[in-house]
Image 1: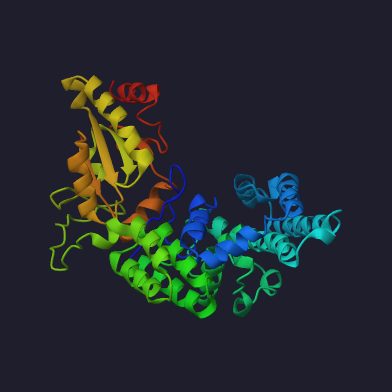
Image 2 (image 1 turned 90 degrees about the vertical axis):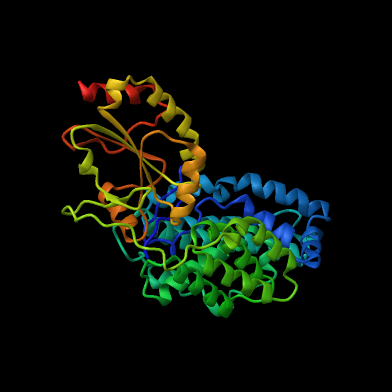
Length: 424
């Protein structure tokens, strides 16, 4: 089954990309999982690094000097402004400068060996994190390509999956952020860099891969983060299976609690029975996409020909989408009865679970027409309208022509004006 996975403030849609997707901006969640889920003995080891005043002062100096190298937003932007060779050279240069700064520091001799390794690991794994992320993030952006763009072998040959498990490196944020990227990239490599079309298979394969190469504290941390990052968009069975694997590991009660807390809605929801009848299908209309109405019937955009259509692509869990709905209602209320006969407000949900879509509609009480699309049709929708994120809006004129493929939001004062122009 194909699906759209979404990220960022407006959520990045990546049809076929679940296996490749990694949050480009390292989340605060990563730090919280480490602090709240990891064994006290590990946290004690981490805290001991900062008991030495010279080490603490150096670290503050290090962070200021190399702030840009660890700035998630700036590094993400560079992924799209440089070639892979340029990116690798810049990352390699930055890593060397960081390590040289450490070794040439006046207080170097006063640093403990564990602190020196901590800084070196920070430099090393930040390099690998962003190098692998180059392939993953750019592949996500290329929605038409069903394969991940692999890095040249010469760039990754030094990264041996069998030697990844490093408990000391686990103390550093770059290494912990690297773990999801590592599993994503090398699991994809084992599957010929094909992008997954099945969310369950993607999560199950990642779990199997992680169990082979991640040991000790690394495995439960990774599984907890995998669940917290992806459970909302993944089928319940794969989520519960992954949670069971996490529970089976020794001394992972706190990781399990963190994962369960984030994924509670998913693991407790009732799945639709397989015997549920398929929606009534209308006759296909060329390459048009069929949307399912609330009562299970199919309809098409061409069914609204003769009217101006304002399309709103959304999902029940999309915060920015919901934030615009009050403005949609205001636009609707401003129209006269005559104008409402000429303008259609069409809301298309991409929720994987149609029951969540219907539940949200009951809560929101949005006036207008409503449709739902998931599975294979989600990928078709993504490609046909070049949708890369939601909320996304589109305006179609009375002749059925798309006049604004990326229209302004309901909160924009220009939106209603544009719609009214088209009905004259």
